[in-house]
Length: 106
Length: 121
Image 1 (tube, chains in turn orange, red):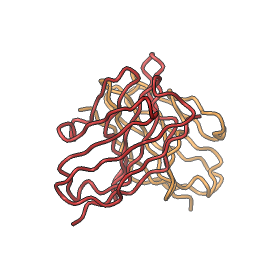
Image 2 (cartoon, each protein chain N blue to C red):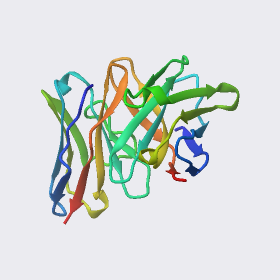
Image 3 (tube, chains in turn red, blue):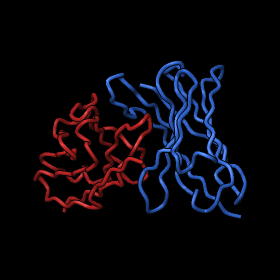
Image 4 (cartoon, chains in turn blue, purple):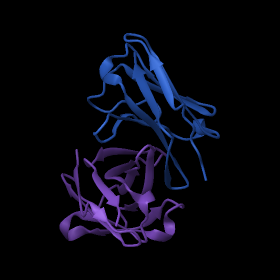
């Protein structure tokens, strides 16, 4: 079955840019979405269709997807961005999640 | 925006069947895909399966033999049954709406608040 690999953790200083990667075989031929989940809360989609932001999501969130890697970029990172982030794609009519990345804002 | 709310027992005994319901408001079940996802302690999100607007289902292969997702259009809710549960099935269970635009992008745009189910005797 298809798999997505994410780094377990990423650290960033406030105001800097955070990049979270998601790797999968020919992932660039599929669409990637990204979810933010804070402790005790439900996941929220922050990027879908590789680089589209839902209404209400900050412009500081952006996405790209090419080759085998999709990337979520958070510019001007704030303490409120500290959360778990999951990538997700669609393969053979099934939903596939990455293992998740814990973003720490130091 | 659809609103989703999970309900069901918070405690299930080992070997028994876990049953949850997701009540949906603000969106008809005749559109989109209706999913169950879980978050186990110390682990990441795991997709369980969905039922589509046409009534077809698709399940995670790792759970396939134990999962059934069904829909009740008259009540605008859909349900999850997971049989023969063990402690490994202890998790927060979420229901979510899946959007598919036909071009290959499928994403989950509305989620319930989640419900904790503990498997223990």
